[in-house]
Image (cartoon, rainbow, N blue to C red; front, top):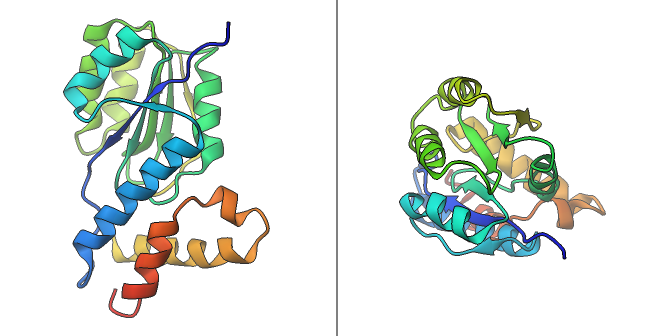
Length: 192
């Protein structure tokens, strides 16, 4: 029997707010994250982080958390995180500012520990405290290649460059799942 796919949770975290279209940008990022989850065939079912640990423990398959201020998480990063859960307890996707863009947890972790982990991931500078907690619990973790979140105007500009470059490559359409972000740039790029 094939193991079930993890449960996916999109966690709201406010992105950089440009002068125009800030609410539309946040909505575009969230919708792109939903599309990404569907593209990699993850199950959804948790709208609240407080329910995520319990749902993941009951449903089996583990938990993958994606943050809503992260543009175009590479599908390969999600698949690598899921694959890594076969050998370790957690997969961490770090951002340069010490936050996470992705967190994957095995399905058989203690629900109380999962709740502790979820409390940490919503704090600024998540990576240090989270790795300390995983180390104290003697859990194995793998670290994915870094990615970025929209925390500044420079990050927004970088995301726009990636969106444009992805249109020029053959694999870009599959590797850069961010159609709504592209549309947002078409409408607001000059004002951002």
